[in-house]
Amino acid sequence: MQIKQAEFVVSNADYKKCPDHDKPEFAFVGRSNVGKSSLINMLTGRKALAMTSSTPGKTMLINHFLINDSWYLVDLPGYGYAQRGKKAMEQLRHLISSYVALREQLTCLFVLIDSRLEPQKIDLEFIHFLGENGVPFALIFTKSDKTKRSQLGGNVARFLNALKKEWDELPPHFVTSSADRSGRDEVLDYIDQINESLKSKD
Image (cartoon, rainbow, N blue to C red; front, side, top):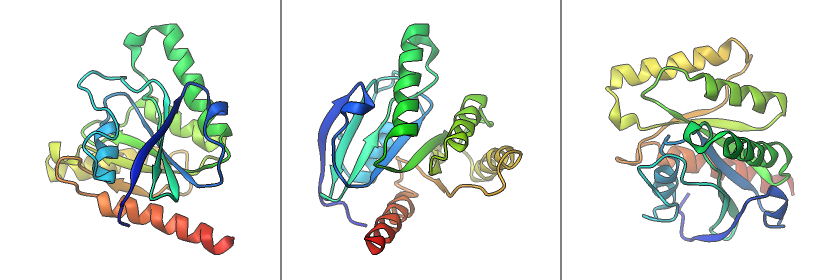
């Protein structure tokens, strides 16, 4: 897929105020500082479509971007940034969970996982929530350039093995790097395949 157009549409603090449309939405979510904004900019080929920061937890709203006038990329807040305070954490948890579980236009949720780390409880719990609510999702392992290739494969395998304890069938997964753009074509092709399958059903 070639991304010829990517434009910011709107930010919202309530999923009920998100745009009313009939286009598919592909949302991106992950633990704070997982590299979500950098990944979105890499996928779209825009340097500053999503705001990046060295400070975790900058995204506080649901951000909609229209891609090629045919589908929406949705940038969700990061979860698990404890320094926000208990009340703010709860508000963000509600914002994310309500969009993910109730947004009818959500076609696929990409859950970003830091490929440098051992399986994190907060990620596994979030994926469990997706299973309970029947949310279609795929995994994107980020920052692959920051890990030795031998270690990278082991980290990905450990995470997938942790999921196997609960899941009979594993979700699709991709390994990416915003620095060297690896995994970009695979993620965009996956989105394209889903969009094409939706068109054939119309």
